[in-house]
Image (cartoon, rainbow, N blue to C red; front, top):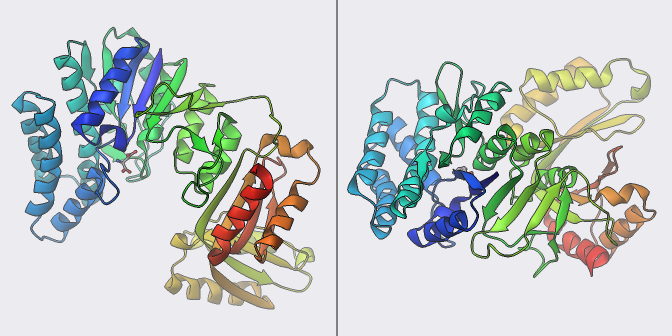
Length: 448
Ligand code: ASP
């Protein structure tokens, strides 16, 4: 039994949905299908989820939201008409939206319920289309499928008890079509995962039903070893381990949501990334173990939007509890951190810029000065992280040397170097302005 998840671009239009149906019909093992909301049909297009977020914003600002509502409906109208679906499919989508807007939910829950309409409608459309082709298919809401999540609007987490419930889906004889991106709390409230979270649903369903394979259909042939918007025609990765994929998606590989790996990894379900527009291509397979090929490095990831909070104090190494108290201040201010590279008398805390606004920064600095009496504390913004990833690196000499030589060639100054003890990745912090040059130089050095 396979779980197939189709991303936004795969369900963006009637034409794409026809490809999706062909893929489903092509393999009778594809019995649990998870879908995103319609995404972009072309570069400048807007995803239905973004339209819904705009609609929600207008609604909460008490502005007219007719325009946004119209835009959402136009998308579904076009799809349902071109697929020649019965009129009630479109009617139901409109009614669902109106019902959510008129509901008594709290604002937070209403935001999530509005966002979820995209996936929910997409699943209804696909199941109606499969039925129209003569297949036995049913739309299943995440609640019926057994997806029970924590009460954290916008960033729900799956609860363990879900998996036994989801396992029961194996008994179904027909194809089930489940909307991605949201689940229900124990109390029956609809809550979404973080953005891009349909991948998470797919992984949860695959783990729950103990699928033989989780196929994640997107719009690229495979995972590339470097961001193709930085390097032209980069090499494709045919196989990756969960750990490698986790590290790559942490630092900007957006092909697969980083939280989506965990359920598949825990249940040892292989994940295959494939292209809806080229379903016979090999794609990229993600498994727990694989043979290391000739190159110990499988990919180079980069992401911007980081800052470094630098604190130094003479004899920091002997001051009991210094690190804990520093991190406690961050916890108190609800700031999560990413890494803490340290020296003898200094400590840097790497934080995503979205976590620490400029206003909050002042407060944090004041608290550090007052509570830790440091010699120096300052914040440096506009940093990028570059990660070189590969399980084979831990037994290979000279990776760091090769990487630093590439940085030299690109004339990029290194602000930070961090190697986790697992040696699956080597991380470099640099000024964001140098990131593209550095990535190009690293690609040349490791892959050409
Ligand atoms: N539609 C949601 C988003 O755009 C979730 C997804 O597509 O995976 O974030």
